[in-house]
Image (cartoon, rainbow, N blue to C red):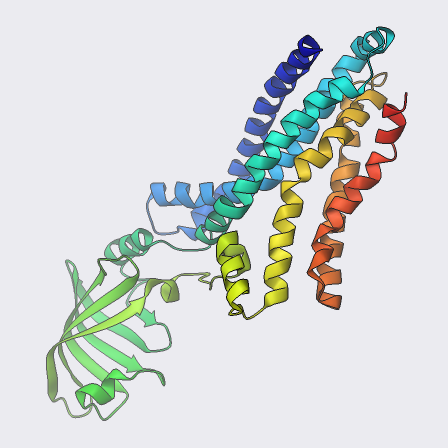
Length: 356
C-alpha cells in the first residue's frame, strides 16, 4: 500500500507545484497594472512591491484551485492509462489512492489556515496602502502634483517656486478643521510663509511640513519663525482606507470580540467563519478532484479539467449566498455555506465512485 501512496503522492506534488507557479504568474501579470497605478510617481521597486501584494492577496484562492486541477489531472491520467482499473482488479479499493489526495489536501489546509489567519490580512491591507517611501519619493521628485498640496481637510498649500528641497513663497488656505491658526493668533483663514520643507517623520507614518516665517495674509505680521504641521500619510494617499475586518489578523478579531469592543460583531464573526471555510477548501476538494478524474478517464484530461469549473463555481456561488444570508439574518454561521455546497459532491459523484 505504501508504494501506491508514494506513487500518487509524488505525482500529485509534481503536478501541483508547476500548476501553482503558473497560476500565480498569471495573477502576478494581471496585477501589474494595478501595482503601477497605485505606485504612480514612485520607484519601480515600489510598483513591484504593490503588485506582489495584490498577487499574494489571491494566494488563498490559488491554493484551492491549483490543488483541484492537480488532483483531477493526476487521477484522470491514472484512469486513462488504466492504472486505477489494475488497482481495482488487484482487490484494492479506490479509497487507497484517494487517501494520497486527502493527505496532500490536509497539509494544504494547514498552510491555508496560516495564510488566511496571519498572512492574508497583512497583504490585503498592504495592497491598498501607499507606503511612506512612495510618498517621500513623490514629494522629492514630482513636486506634489505641481504646486498644490491638500493636507486632508485641514489646509491646502500653494507655492511660487521650488529651490532644492525647499518651497518658497507659500500660501496656506485653511479648512474648517484647522486648529493651529488659533494657537498662533491668526485672524483670517489664509496664511503665508516664506519657506517650507516637506519630510517624512522618523516613524514613517506622518508627513511633516516645516514652515518658516509664518504670518497672517491680511495683517502681514509674522507670528512664528518656525511652525510644523503634521499629517498622517494615509490621508494623502490615493485610495487611502481605514482598517476593516479583512485587514485584521484572526487573533486581533477574537480579542476584540472577547472584550466586546468590536463595533460590528456579526461582521467579525462572519470573517472568522469564512476564513475557516476557505481553509477547509483543499480538504473538501480532494475527493471531488479524484472523482472527476476517474469519471473523465475515457474522455481525456481536458474534459476532466473543464469539469472542475462546476465545483469551483458552486463553492464561490455558495460563498456569495452565505454573505447575503448573513446580511439578511445576522447569522454568521452562513459563512459555512461553501462547505455544505462541497459536501454535496460527497454523495454524488464521489459517493458513486467510492461505492464501486
